[in-house]
Image (cartoon, rainbow, N blue to C red; front, side, top):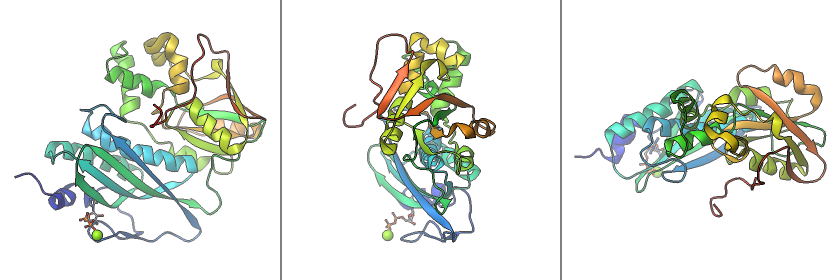
Amino acid sequence: MPLGEFELIDRWFAHAGASRTDVVLGVGDDAALVAPPAGYELALAADTLVEGTHFPAGLDPAAIGHRVLAVNLSDLAAMGAEPAWALLTLTLPRTDEAWLAQFAHGLDTLARRTGTALVGGDTTAGPLVVTIAIAGLVPTGQALRRAGARAGDLVFVSGLPGEAAAGLGVLQGRLAGTAAAEAVVKARFLWPEPRLSLGVALRGLASACIDVSDGLAGDLGKLCAASGVGARIQAASLPVSAELAALAGPEAARLCLAGGDDYELLFTAPARHRDRIEALGGARISVIGEIVAGQGVVVEGLAGAPFDLGGYDHFRG
Ligand code: ADP
Ligand code: MG
């Protein structure tokens, strides 16, 4: 007999994630109860992964569990918030115990490492869709926002944008290279690392921040629109890794600018903070351009034919 809904929740999700003293009541009642500390604001976000849209069918279930939490943690990182509590909504075609064990393991490992408690959710049958809604904490008034960039600020990005898109290309058989380069970029797609400590460190330093999920240039366009400014990016300053260059050749800069699935932080700050920002440990940080008066994102020195920098739109493709 297949596992029922309630055994499934009990076995895999009732005790998943970090245990936190501010969880008054976790999985098992009609709603969870949590006790937010005084002096903090709650940062709330939700993100869904749809099989066939956000990841190819048949992907490693542990990576799906990791990614659905990582993309939510990335939204908290972009706000300068620290994770606290998460809800998991699962729509599953069937109760495949091996699949669930691996999915829960991927989710639980990242949740414990980041101090995220899983306090509830919902479970239904249907095509594979996984959603997390997350709550984080940020000291009152200190959250980073998309609005706040000023003309003259520098534009920074963490990590190596474009590698995740190349990794998806390898997984889908569209890109190929050495085994070592393929392993690097596939891991970037499967196991994105949310930049939580960077987000917290940028409180008081960054003037605006967004996480890169739909492509660097498109997401920079959103930050600029929210801030009422434009940006000038230098193609020669983009952090294109040796692996990305080897796998994507002349397409490398395009993947870096428009690839998506990076979950890096893209942020602006006055030039006087540059040294302090570059000295922050953890992720690699690159200055890729500057904020200008006006509107729109211009990339200078891009070789080859011009292309749409717009970023992904689920209804326009
Ligand atoms: P309700 O009948 O109120 O919708 P459910 O029977 O769906 O509640 O869920 C029972 C309990 O299990 C609730 O506390 C709910 O938050 C939790 N829960 C359901 N699905 C999940 C899941 N996928 N992960 C974590 N907790 C879950
Ligand atoms: Mg209920």
